[in-house]
Length: 325
Image: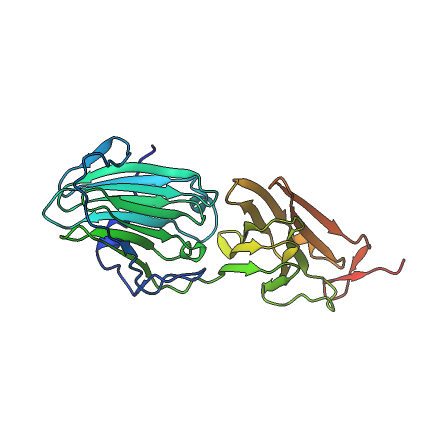
């Protein structure tokens, strides 16, 4: 298990975050209210009933264990940040907790048992935008709590879900987040056969102008529903960080309405498939052009750039115009 610093996310799970705070809710929406889902059962004294768990890791009083899960795709590009899972023991006693984190296909990303001494915690950083499920069990009381991590929680804000043990052995669950406005960060589901569209740029180019805008599409022609990520940047500025759940034949259409040099990345977070592309300033001429990315049935990506092939001549004002041929 690779362990590295988690940028103080443990503190986010147990103390107020600087700035405005919101707490979790359900669905693909940013967290905004507390979610408590403890499931308590009376303890049993039957010695024949045991919980099958791995070897315990003991966390000393006042210390934090930091764990990073995933391929760290959120740190490579875009405007999104990881989401944290925090186990917190603010009591005076030592408690044992079993933490399981599963990925969307139900594969196990983390399965660990921790003995948390007083005022200790475990901070897990989820570094890929996936629909994780986190479950915590306390063997001493047989109480448990489960949280489904929303895709929308992976935005530009610092956020975490905390599992806090109470003095009676119950688990209190809450998701909190800062509330910065995340410009150009969008999380959306596109229904089968539908399209969502947006424009990026100052709007100086249109289909009626001599120089034409450049189009971009991300399409799912398969019969499956696929979540994909589309990041478009111009230099250091991220113009779009879109996380789209595309149903069959769903499409994202982007129009670049300002000349410039753009860099793009399309990816499928569940498989790690990535396709990069760029749009250069000379592609904004009198021709109609577009970069089209298609999701294949094997979860790979195909990308191509197409353009009409008219000869463009500069006009008196320096813009391009179509030659008569």
